[in-house]
Image (cartoon, rainbow, N blue to C red; front, top):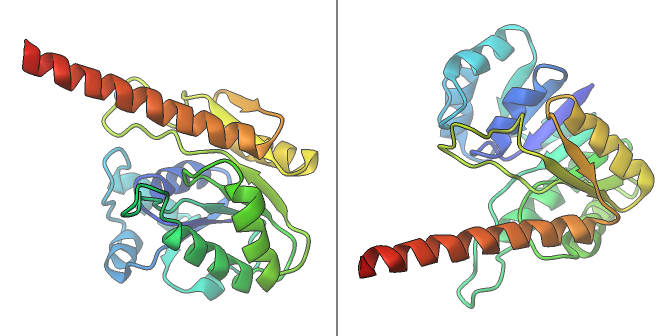
Length: 221
């Protein structure tokens, strides 16, 4: 089964490394320097050893690319691109929309499309699905499992951090649960993609509030 991971940063490359144990993975990224490094077996991400990438390459289980055409034929596509805040504090979906459009142009058969990028509730339903169906009106399955990578955390990683998964249909949700269950210990299905999207925003907000509190207390102390 072919899996394409869109974005080879700390989220996308981490998922690529784990998924490569069970699937044939295409790692798509716009940065040619990063792609060349990865194809030479060199990781640029903390927590993903170069030996793992080199091993997957030697087994024919992983290849990085800048070509959208290489996504063609994928059974599963995972979108893992940055969604920074814009100048007015709202989500900047420029990279997400560009990645989604590229996926829609490349897919020529029905696939499971999973979003891992952090965004507001409704993004999968109102942004990602319409853009992909515009370029590839094949009735794809759509699911979301927001990334939960915590760089530098020695106790929790991709395998033992619970995953929240929602889908636009039960079929999509169940297919995404099966995918993540191949390399994650705990996968928690929820009733809708909006629930998963909201859970991620709550987690980020909780973390930010706690970090801000600690920084304030440090100054006082």
